[in-house]
Image (cartoon, rainbow, N blue to C red; front, side, top):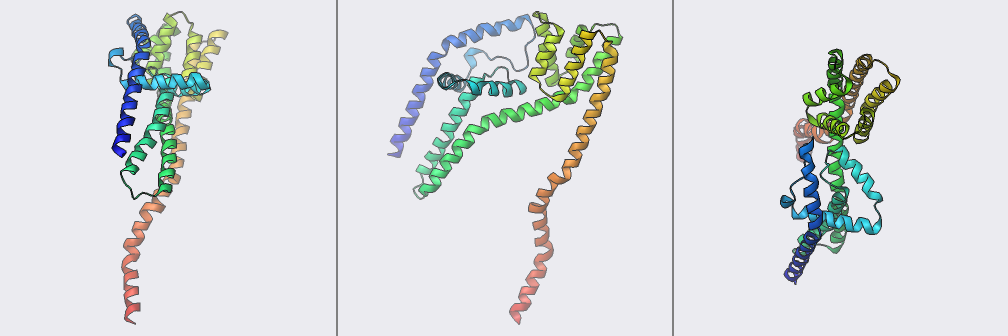
Length: 304
């Protein structure tokens, strides 16, 4: 009976995959046409995959996420889109991530039920509780991974920003305009900040002004340091203030902030070390130090 149930679930899943693949063929062709725009400018490291090499799981996730989002409203999409932009996952849509949440929320409990079904000695209460916990875990895991990646990426951008300001100051003092200084800095800087700068330069080549491109950069990387950087440049452009002096003052401020952040992490280190000390190191030390003494005392008490 269990084998028949497993076979039925597998065939139903295969049918859903085939249907989703058929429904997504027009969209895949559109993605292939849009991907051709890359030859006209910068494309980020996270490039759009070729439609022929896209996995069936991605197609199924996009189909499921789009269907459920259209039926129940897309209020959750904006939040997911913000997480994806912060993580630099521009090739992944919010509906695809939502689809992964749904598939994980259904697939992980199904795997748990399949494991428990093969073992007849499992209590029913454990099966029910485990099913609920695995469903919650499957729902939260994809978003948690994307958020963690986004936080790490934003931290890398904040850490590399003082070097960007130094390059801009050197370029401005060499007689290059601010837009040209951004282009030079984008070619010299790698990592997440370099990708965002090259994307901002591509937006300028497509017709946006420097201030609009920097405001979009601030929206993609909504941190306090990036916000201070973009606001200083926008105000300097609007008021006509010397950009070189603004960049020097901003570089000093950025390094002070980075030093304060390092000091804050150093102050948090003893608190974070307290938990492994109490629960892992101290018990082992007590066993080694007090174990022989307790054994001797108990042996003496038995002899009496």
